[in-house]
Image 1 (cartoon, rainbow, N blue to C red):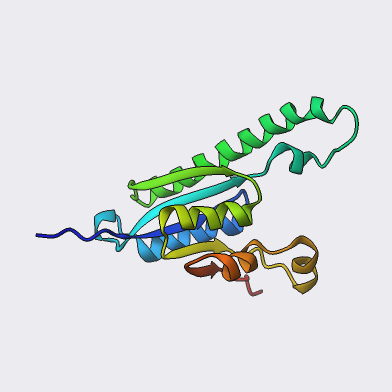
Image 2 (tube, helix red, strand yellow):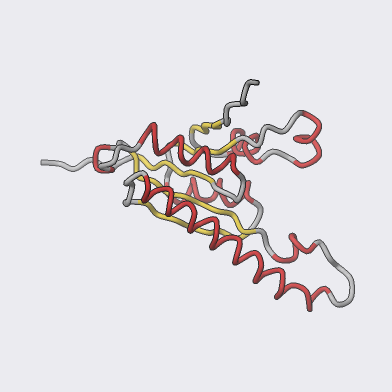
Length: 161
């Protein structure tokens, strides 16, 4: 009997409630409590910015700040990954690969898609308007155009009053 390899689903996560919602939504819709029934293998990826990017400093003394910034970024990454693992455990999904890549989230996610030969990339939408997207850039927009797989952008529903 031949075994068929599962398709890979990569979920990008950061410290935002939007990416947490996207992970929870993905687990609820694509993974059963018994992950062996899911057609996907799950890979969760967090992009940790490099200290030089996060600090944004280029003057004298900047080198002294980088270790402090890097330590803070590592703490944030550990917190994000721990929360992702807790969510998976709470949803009874135990077969998951969790990674932290360093660099711009756009590149880290697209590289993870390539490395894992993913068939789908799931991202949360921060809900930025056109102006904020133009100024800040949109990770989901970039990935939708550059990732070599299908990209699903999960939007957190707006609460109607």
